[in-house]
Length: 214
Image 1 (cartoon, helix red, strand yellow):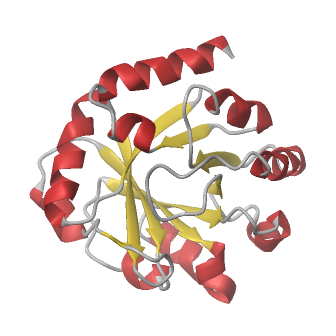
Image 2 (cartoon, helix red, strand yellow; image 1 turned 180 degrees about the vertical axis):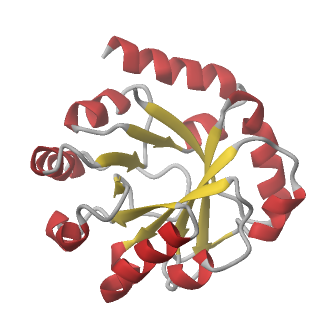
């Protein structure tokens, strides 16, 4: 089964609350994007304290676009934030520490690769991670253009490691979603196509229909 998960990318606490409440009625899971202004140029808000203020049954993936993912993982996240994704480019030699810490908190761990990062970078962690996430845009904001050259990396990784769940994040819409699935994706993270839509429920339905028809 293909998961389609909207991503919440907010510039301030007010926007964060509004985006969560906008999408929560239509989904069981959403992605919280967090940027620290260092690993990515912009500061993107997704504080655990803000999430704790909201009353929703939605569960959350947390995408840490930050220079110190381990420090963020150690913050007081509510139980419903149960899957954490961090960039291998930021973690470096601390990737295994991140994975072990997430699992010790009864959370799942995923490693994220930017478009230019070779898949060999995460080879030492196969069998330890729960997911790998391929960025099909350069991270940091809504509306970036889908980078089709990443599809070859996704396909190569899937052939090498068919047992690993693959997420794809960036530029996902009814045209690009089938391409990502054909390459091996099981999780599609969708941003502006849904979150900037005046009809997010309808946009989700169109995206899901494109998957079924592919």
